[in-house]
Image (cartoon, rainbow, N blue to C red; front, side):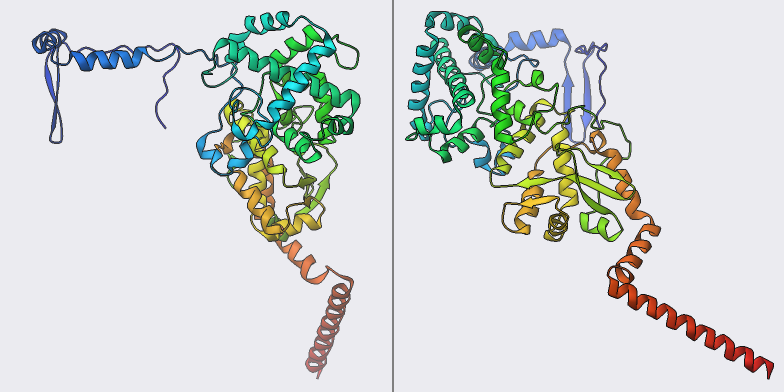
Length: 465
């Protein structure tokens, strides 16, 4: 590893006080004194003036950095990750925010967004100019949430935020107060049940986001808060809880910056008790589920609703039920991508996926966990599940020493490598796994004992004679 430089150290350019020659193999590099450099510059005159000006223009043409590390929360998917499954990161039905704005394949839903925008304005009977002024006032803050410069003009950007933001508020409002079936039936041409499901997945894509704070501004200006939905975030949480059929862990809603962040929150434990215990052994190797099972580890469905709450006590590994369907990959991949970009040192879900990729290496491992009720397979074959979980971790940055599961890795590996557990498991599996084997083992033991007694008696009789 390279040497690090502490914050109080300063790096100063060194200027040689005397001319010297450095020899490196057959290459000689001369270090000039400052006076000699000035002489070279004046001697060459305007020989390279055009090149110098070109370089200056190239540097000066760069836009000043407008992205604050603290405010940036919406990222482009890295190419190395995107190529694993392009479709998992690309919206199918609707664009939200600037990254996919103007996409040809998403144009049909623009009509629905405008329709909802019109309905929003009619319902609130509010001065549109106030909304425009509010977005204009926070435009730079909104732009700063994106990890690249947005090329849209100020007016076009504000228009985009208004239309997309008001659409989301009106759409969520309709679903929560009228019910999903009513909303789908009302817009059955553009929003059929299949499109509705696809749109809910599109809203969780990392590149397809609006920051929550600007949605809160629109919501607070145009909607009178009530006890049930005092904010847009509370409205979004209610709908996501219905979509996931799961309650959001307490004390996490305040952390959500957008829908992708909110989707991640559903995977986190409510107490944030997940480990984060430093362990120098690291979490870089783990035996497969089949190997652990052969060594005597028992597998049991965990009672926790949180996928990440794995426990290993008294030789039993508890894993919460994993339900895998076609849309699961989209959700998982975008949560992982968001952690890679925004939570590199707090990547609980990524650590969980890496752990699964160690446990599940072959269809045999999948079959074992299906038998135990840990995996519900909606992907088809066991091989499809194994490939799915193993591919999720490809090209993902992972630090085993910083894993949330260091202690679990160490305990499972130690259990497997203890010969006592292997012998005990083998004995139980080969001789006591079924009533018939128990009976035959007992019969063989009795026969062996009788034979031994007969042999001893024969030896005693011979000795006496």
